[in-house]
Length: 600
Image (cartoon, rainbow, N blue to C red; front, side):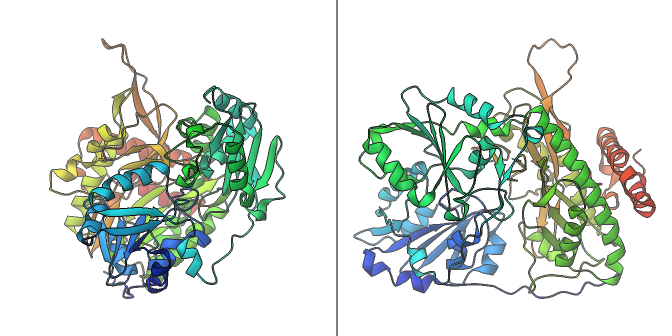
């Protein structure tokens, strides 16, 4: 049994908080709130807008810092708690946002005469600000807008946005051209509205059938879009893209956006917009009576893929499966000679670059060996990477963008002999994964209702995982796409619809020792149900990820006959679709991975 070489994880804090505090007297505030999101409400943000990371050192995609004069809190979700404690200064309180409200933390430090806390209204949605204001007032905290971004004022040598190539996707990839999409959208704009405002780059890119690379790992063009009720389109982009040319679209710059917006309101124009997506700054004017509330009509429309998009998803998952299988065969050979977490990711990327339509990674790989696997969103760095050995589990969570779709897959592997505990827990995770994958459920069912299927077997052993079971996936867009998701969060109340694409990724994490996760991507489709007394239509999932699941970690005696049948059928599909694209040794390896165990 091989012994892995380990490099110790050390904190990587970058603490610029004192620079921010120097501005408090000038603005007469006691605190300032800094989110991980940007002016476009992005989950993943470009380097020049990573204000939270610059301030605290925290690099996760979901966080909120509350910086008071003598105390700071960083709130994040269960995926990032361990990572946050490693990355931020030891004096910063790291808080699980699911268990403790930021408002309660603030209330503890509220002064007798109250606290005044500032925020940039360009970085929060209107609904989010209203929610904060209501609760904070009850805690004796006054929330005040500051129109200068305080982080930008003290962030010297701030990176600049680089010009990225804009791709105008062909209808053979999208299934619908932008003229058709815009016309469909206009039918949903209230008659009293003169314009519709979109500020979410994923909605804009989907609507216009364009992609770019302004944001790492996400093919977005940072932009705002104004649509008149006559169908005229004005796209506001950064200066770097001012020479962009798109048929039927007028191009202007974001520098001019706020003046154009103010002028329209002064002229008496009414503008429809989504309070859950547009910046709260849009409401900081005397013309709010001209703003019409309208949920972003692109959100549901882009989540339900058309037939062309769905076929693209299936095809790109085969391409990705070929690359992944070639890589796993290579990795198995390389463990003997020595390969670390970062090197493994680099080799997977090399195999993907050989596949048709590949555009780039859809997120930073989670390549985690041993104890690093217990960090749900671990990011291997030179000072934390481990050599992948044979005495523990290796968790690899990796995805890719192709012109015809986006992938997201996780596999847990063992290149030696796993412990009985590891096999048992892997099998419980697998049973939950299978139970969700083979579920049949009536139209109208939400992800909240389905989530228990993936957790049930872990719960019976008093085990659980602190992240969602599944999320929506964009079509060569955001790898995390709403509104659908599968989780035990009460907000997961959107019914799944045919054409939606979701992930299935239960897991288990033993702090300081190892992590387990199995993730496939699935399409929601109508079930071919037999004649039944009920007239209710039922749905099911079509699994499209084509990568073998580690059979050497499965305790087959704990699987039911139905679970064994599912696993056998899944592996047969993987072999049938992938083997023909592999060379001789790779094909033999895949045969052993898919057929090298008794399913009976």
